[in-house]
Length: 122
Length: 122
Picture 1 (tube, rainbow over the protein chains, first blue to last red):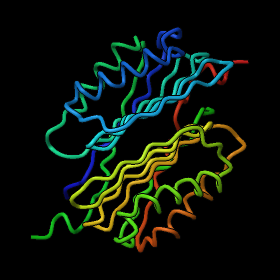
Picture 2 (picture 1 turned 180 degrees about the horizontal axis):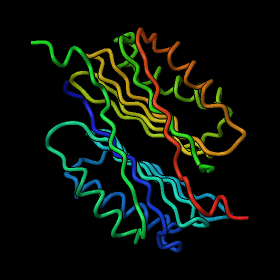
Picture 3 (picture 1 turned 90 degrees about the vertical axis):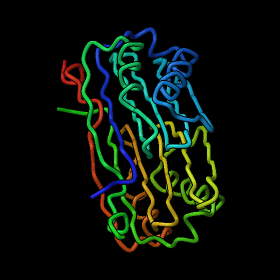
């Protein structure tokens, strides 16, 4: 069965801890990841969390969203790349994020979203 | 092992199609869901997608995020509730969303985020 969307859940571990508390860097990186995937950015929100320096951010794209939540004290970032449509390549965003955050260890879980009977109807 | 976050992926099917294209209603509903869970809202972005009337929205909370993407033409909404910490009850948000969107069929996938060795260290 076809699905409407593809949702990649990235667990990025052993990242560069300094970068994980740099809101401007994280915004630039999420924007670059969206563009690298071929997505069209339509809105964004980022927020810092003192005192640990964690950052949360979301980028709405025409094809769904990217999000990031960082825990600098653990060197960890949780990133989501949720896309729909056939004109987009989320794997390119994954590679960019792993490289830019200097993740020493990472894993990806891929979930299909919107598996609907109506998609298979003629 | 402990995890930093709990991520609920909701597949809401056979929803009220009219509601799925009502941006103001969806914003109010996501805000209510966040508050019902005990979350603190820190930022939000919502965006409509003509011509089908789909809506994408994200609410950043102090405890991570809620997001929604709707496909009114399929009666379907993909909702994420990503939370961290022990003071929050995301299941309350799930119930509210199912009820408000009048989902006739739904499923939930729960994923633990940030399962780290450092969390188990003394």
